[in-house]
Amino acid sequence: MLFLSRSEVLDQVASDIIAGLPASLTTRRPVLIYCGVHKRFGMSWLRRGYKIAIQTEQMYDENGRALWGARSERNRKNIRSACRWADCILDLSAANKRYYDEAGLTAKAPGKVVYGPHIFPTHRMSYVSPDRESLIFFGHVEGSRREDLIANLTEFSVDRAELGTYADQLRDQIRPHLGVLNLHFEDGVYTEAPRLLASYLCGKPVVSERLGSEFVAGTHYHLIGSDAAFRARDIFENFSDLVSERFTFRGFLRSLLRDDVQDKEP
Image 1 (cartoon, rainbow, N blue to C red):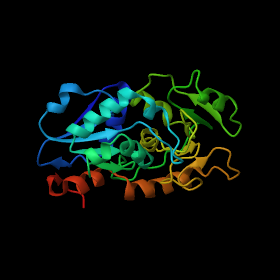
Image 2: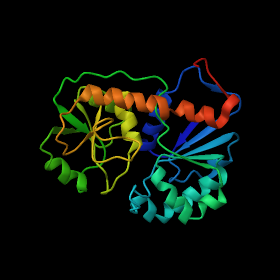
Image 3: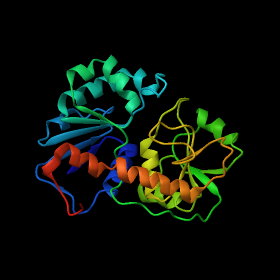
């Protein structure tokens, strides 16, 4: 199984998905996983093997509001290529179905698109007790709505990871904190599954603006502005219950490739 990506951010996503797969997992035929197909993969689509395209961008929120991904013609062109060349597209947000319908991609690639955040580990991760009483945010902040939200957040103190911090260096910065702060790039109701995955691998619960309907506020994450106490361990364990049962990448592969997937786990 080979993961391909086209940026450091997407390298991180691919690395995090790989970290959650059993070491014993193999496939009978070559499987190529293109991570972040809003980027251009060009001649890489000509590689031999079963091709899975992972679409990470937010196109619409759950209320039908168009987001940044839907406004990019480059995104549309590259996702069209993915629909043409890939055997399956895993779009991490069910709210994006409208995008494929409007772009005529659903009709051109019938049955190819699977929706949902199916990128989490097979095994349950363990909660990691914090050494600090602050949250951490990683991602773009300067000049965005996130900057104002962090400045006006009164429930928690927030540390920021330096932009451009990835892999083990990022994980080392996340683990001491109380949890991970998730703020939307644009106003809306949607889920940043890659950030949730990175948080989960580090044993941390998420404090967030409202996420997509797969995740329940107060149960799977702490909603910003909630009157409820922040139950870090309980929220983390509830989140772990959900993703390990419904949203594992291994489960997605097995449902897609069936007998082609071999591993020692039941």
